[in-house]
Image (tube, rainbow, N blue to C red):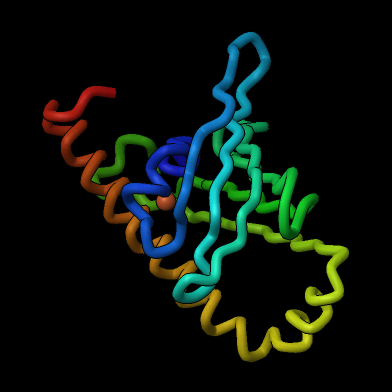
Length: 152
Ligand SMILES: [Fe+2]
């Protein structure tokens, strides 16, 4: 979840999926927890989809991403983490559930929906790589923090 709220990490940690990332607004505090990011998602090769996305945390274990401008505006991804083990467990485990509601007014979106059976494995592979990399990063950070070699 911390990775998801580290808006900058997408450009240097997932360059195969995200290009031209810039954080255009940071939270101002006092009830405002929104990060706003301009980023292009690399679909394949040089084909990229530029969007503006807003990240908020409506709960301590929930992160909400809303596409506010660009392709798929109004689409939402909600990510929720649920601990599966006690807080002091030697090997903590967490279930992460993600709900995606994708929307688009473009005519091409209907074609994309028709091509979903073909696109789905590609998207699943991309999402899988992002999750594997984020999990490895989170585990490294946890280990470094646990051994006092990482602040935070
Ligand atoms: Fe990530």
